[in-house]
Image (cartoon, rainbow, N blue to C red; front, side, top):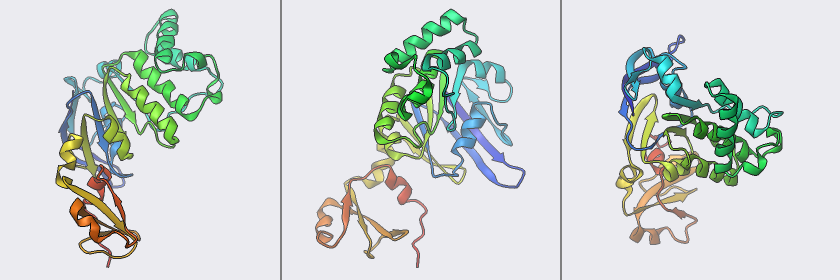
Amino acid sequence: MIHCENLTKKYSDGFTALNSVSFETTGRINTLIGRNGAGKTTLTRILSTQLMPTSGTASINGMDITKDVDQIRRSIVSIPQEASPLGILTAQEQVGMFLIGRGHSFRSAKEESRIALESLGLGDFRNLPADKLSGGMKRKIFVAMAIASRAETVFLDEPTTGLDPISRIEVWSAIREIESEIFLTTHYMEEAQDLSEHVFLLEHGNIAASGTVKDLLKPFSGKVRVESHTEIPDAIKIGAMWISYVTADETSEYLGKGCTIKPISLDDVFISRGVEVES
């Protein structure tokens, strides 16, 4: 379990990336969502002991992130957004080297990496250089590291950024295979909605909302989203698009008027919050 209390991070240039963030994880997969620059990566780096907070406290399974650094690092795995495999090494070599770095023997690392890669459907590809693999397979190598490590907690920072839809689904499937508690950050709302047991919305360095996907979508119960390139009543304007939320019975007013009607998703949690209508 991750527990944060008034966690704050201010950089030397005066920018406040996190502002008194407080929350506690529940369930196996907890997801942090937010726009680019909301502070997701900063929070993940602090929790995985890569960055010191300015103030506040946080703990992972009862261990303080500033006082119990060595113990925490032995119990977690952190896969950063920018992680990429070494192209000349095979998938099994990549995972094996990672495990040896965590204290496994050569024999144990070889066996555990084989088991993890096979569980993700990479058994037939484990002896190929990474640069011969697809984007989804490359990201699955890092998921294999998390599986093989048997860590208590795994941090995944935007694990599917830049992947095509098929590769993204492959990685989602792989993430479900991890038995550890997972703290995931993403700006793909479909990813959060598909994987998460609990979601935290980070906005301008603050936790603006949290709950299950069902909790967050409760304000939109019985409604659909209407999008139009021409002004419509009681709408939010984002760029050149006007967006409104109406009941299913009210959609008839918009049919044949060039409007698009879509079901509600976590995207609407963002769209409906703090967006000023342009004059």
